[in-house]
Image (tube, rainbow, N blue to C red; front, side, top):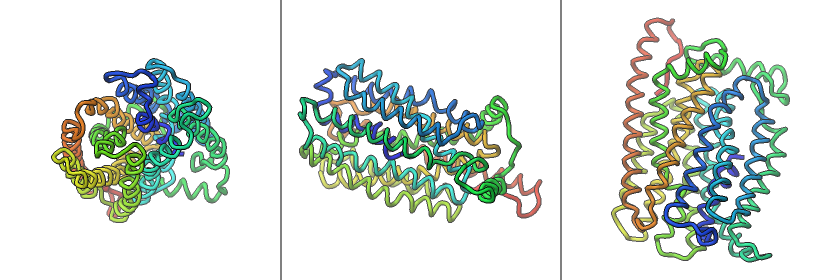
Length: 423
């Protein structure tokens, strides 16, 4: 589901190579605005959606399945757009329809897996994002090569038709498979439901009783650690702003359309392999800070290389560095959010959605780091993303020292062997 979530969202980046801008008469920064506007709709829906899921007012399995079908329909409608305004509207509503899935998936994983387990599961989930980025170019290349002009329809329109239709079909299949809450998932036995609930209860630091929506909002937003984690994830996703322009960046290496789309695949395949291993390592050692430091440092090195040379081989190697480095740390940060701000189910849901909202706000402004005339090195974008990576590392170390102080306080007031925060 997340593979298709990201595939539908980023199909526009491949469509750009098949004359989408020419066919819709886009000029200036209009393409960049169409990228950005999706995240305005995306941000508006995340917090209310996760609050609703945590409140037991909806069944997550049905709710997420319906949302997926809706974004599939909206994505398909992109094929019918004829101008800038049409594309802008479709992208805005795509953001609204897609918004519930990712924070909802994070929340579901966090209420079924313990603090040591969740980072690896989040990494596996996020690998779908990476693989989507890897294979979107291959799917687009095949579509453009075989369907461009068939029945008088441009290849980029076929791309949206095919991917959107597949999404709707998968959504209908997913509804009976997805879980609800630990105590209400229909396909678990009574004993399994109770075990799932008790595992998370025993693993929660400073656990509180369930709260109503207003009280949960107050509890979440009165915790200053939320804002540091939100800033950290915002900087992380700001550093991954290259995602929406990756085919364009690879295109500056000087190859043709099909070769360019094929070359977008290997960096993300490697990232998809390393990402889950990174998450497993973080969970096994119950460690976050050094993992984030290593990953973002590798990414910063990649951005520096890409900005400083026109050598084709060096710049393609740089693509591997920043793709692997940025994507590896995502599960570490989100696992840290779940483990640090999970005192109640409602607070956890709010925190995950708020952090994801703050992070995705980066996609509103990062497209403007890639003006069309700034290629091939995109010095402004690469320099900014290296800076974002460095600032993300500083946030991780700040939180580490903060939690070390909190743990010292907890050890003074609780019995020996009590739970403390991981960093």
